[in-house]
Length: 320
Image 1 (tube, one colour):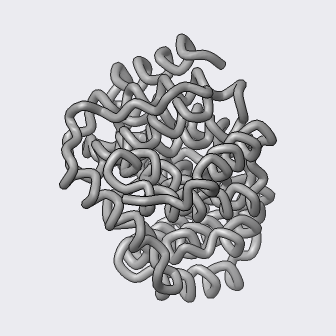
Image 2: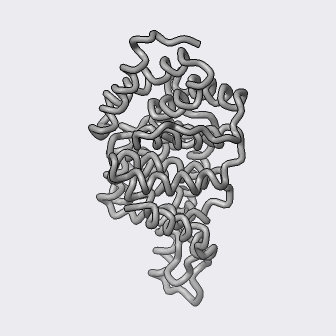
Image 3: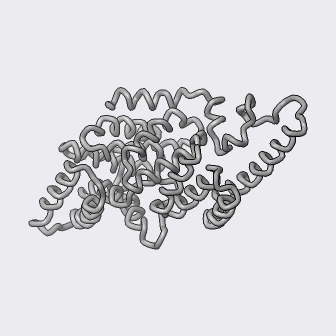
């Protein structure tokens, strides 16, 4: 997929039907009545059998709704309740989805991934755009790059489900990383997603984030990384400080409202941004980046370019 296709996906996201987007929220499909996509009660008189079935459905949906609230406020509690519901209803996919989402919110992607598999085996339909993003993040964080990219391709036309532009920018950045994971073949697609993120990036942290990822893309093309001219030194150093704080405590994720990407990739982006101000800090960050690339399933050309850049620093020993 090239830039043209990525631009098409972005355009589709911007022109999505808002009524369609409204159907892609957190409401599970079991809680949407046939013929009433927005979830209104089924019209008409119900017979006794229908009443029993609908009573069961309403009870389940009430529990799922409470679990969704817990997921957003207390994922540890949601995980406990999700396990309980899975024991009661082992054939339903929703309890497994909620467990997977809770593990993801806790940063435990290796634990989340088999739970997503269990939900798919039980017929989960991914009609919730938010669940689809959580699934894509888990795939990207566990080395399932092709699944992550395919999921983001499906998700991007639904971005109107997020009224917040910061969330949209984060998803574009996550999609760009998934495309970069495909090696040289993914560069053009990643560039398209980064261009979409750059257009809307106004907050200090995300603007630097987009610039750093764009510099990383240029470096992988073999070009000289160019830094966004809108960035000044304080903004770059603020970004570097935030990057260094990611993952310093067990289970600690990125700052609020940041994309969910492997830590070492963000270290690489920060290294390229700060190099003009301190080669010592840039080298330290790139060493962390190189370590993560070695340990990941990164494409061979990326591993080669990462090591080549590291070797260029080593003879000089760095300096501010």
